[in-house]
Image 1 (cartoon, rainbow, N blue to C red):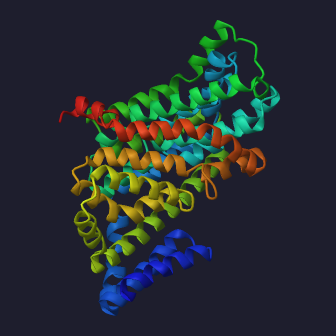
Image 2: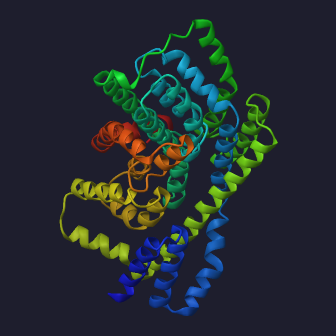
Image 3: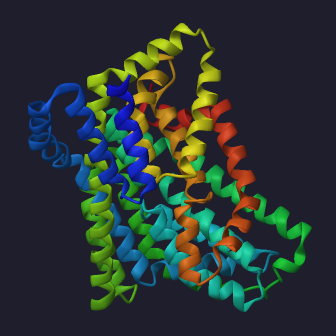
Length: 431
């Protein structure tokens, strides 16, 4: 019992003490391997496994998509998207908030980074909403929760990592994320419209934009939309692998941001620095999760858990419901990537063993990650938006709670109707 429990307790203790989660996983996993297998096996794993996993060709997709997002966010491309959405819906009650959702959906199709989307949109849209007298709860909550679309609408870093860890088709995962991503955006729009209808004072109306200006705003986002079509089209058609599409997309994002987005030397350096920081963080967590996963494999904890649950004769839907509740709770306290890397060795064999589709499970997990990105106490997107807008965190959380109802309904729909996730990839790629 001690051999199995001590590393898990050690992981929780180091996490509470403030150690970065990647290093907590490394320390706890190494301790578990040492206790259960000995010193020499531990040295062998530490000597070879981190490099073998981190040098995977597929993982190069991660820094490339992060770089693409950062380059576009540092220029004026995101601003052009917001202005375009504002031109078409800004005159509606709550239109600026609706425009922020639309711009986030557009930027999500250009990046896989939720925090980059939230930070960029906070800098652009929140000052505009404040200028027109919008309540901070509405503006902060909208930008925080709409930024989560970047981890569902492809290209998504979460779906890429899920595909790598579970050896699932990244192309199928990307296609599967389209409908849930659009459903999520629709849920945010409906939630905003209900909120402003019940309390019109939080969102004063704005003057309607003339059609000539609307058409000019469409022209301004033309290069970015071409990039979306190229990156997505090359992946979905099979003309390029996700890694190849990410490489070309990052280069194209650099060109677009310099030529059309006003990106210059200082902004370019900031984009590269932010990409390096994010990549280092993600790879540390990946290596830590790999070492922790080796400890789990040695102790046979996943297999024992699966056998125990099967022996209980619990219906499959009940097990899925329990797992969803666990993921939602974990999302309140841990980084979403860490949750996925930490739990997949346990939950993936269980879910697949129960007969559920791995693509569907990847979409459901991504949806729980969206919710975790804005819920307290960790809520990374909420922290990012509050810091970017220089606003109290309490106001962001207050706005988010009112919009989470739509997210929870979408999650329920994905659970009840798997065809929402599986229908499009089944039609596109075949059964």
